[in-house]
Image (cartoon, rainbow, N blue to C red; front, side, top):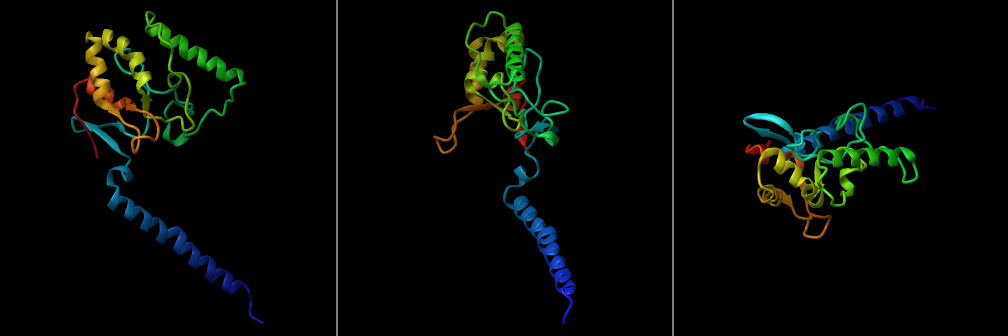
Length: 194
């Protein structure tokens, strides 16, 4: 009677080779060949220097920049290694407190703005890394940014519209704008993704 150990070890070795070596190399190779920018992290460069990723939000706090969606990642905001939501439900007092403090910060930065605060400026997403905000969130911040930069409101709205993305396939999602691309446009920097 043959020992069951030898077939088990052969199967283990074969599956390790296929699933742990060959498959990852094949998927990585195909990704680099077909989607080189995305496989490389969609790094955005301005002036020949990397300034961020098109796919991961960044924290902007200066009034002269658009602010992105709040991040619930830990231990710091927009931490790609700690992607995840806060898991706070609508009845959780911590969520209510977070929303109230974010609304207070927005109102303090632009006290004359009486428009309703868009929800994506006060709530974190499931990933905590959203690089985009809704057009409503961008328009809400336009006057603050225009005032801080000495620009007209129309100039800033024009930049928002010029950098807006349409819904995927014309109907999936809503129009949105990448915060990093919009802030680079405000600075007059030409950016490209590598």
